[in-house]
Image (cartoon, rainbow, N blue to C red; front, side, top):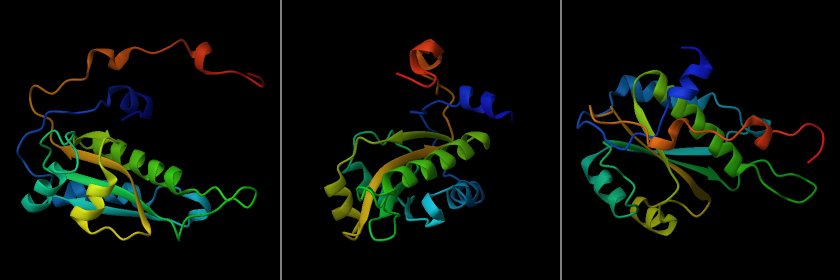
Length: 172
């Protein structure tokens, strides 16, 4: 599929079938995250696959935005492993995790798996429920599954500001 077409047609799916994401599809999605660029290719991302009945039950205790998806990926970064900018000590972790999440989200869309990127979750509850080490920082939750027949983008999905409002050349 043409990339711009994929980007325009992809939407946040909030209604899924009960069918589990196949291992073949999950492997493709995870591969997209694996090959995603990260600062200095350090690859600080750590991805927790949440797809057992018990794990999904735990997930539901950490966010109301699970949309009854049969699978979720919790994307974290290792605070120890990420690149740090020498000028101010800023680290690349959130950016790297976001790039990885975006790659997985777009691969999922390209193979017919619907996703919603969820930031509305309780990190402390996630840490406790999934025994996440202190070194790992949860950034994004990508809930996913096969879209239900009634799945549709929200009304505002195709509404965009004028390009001139968001893009400036050389000066603000």
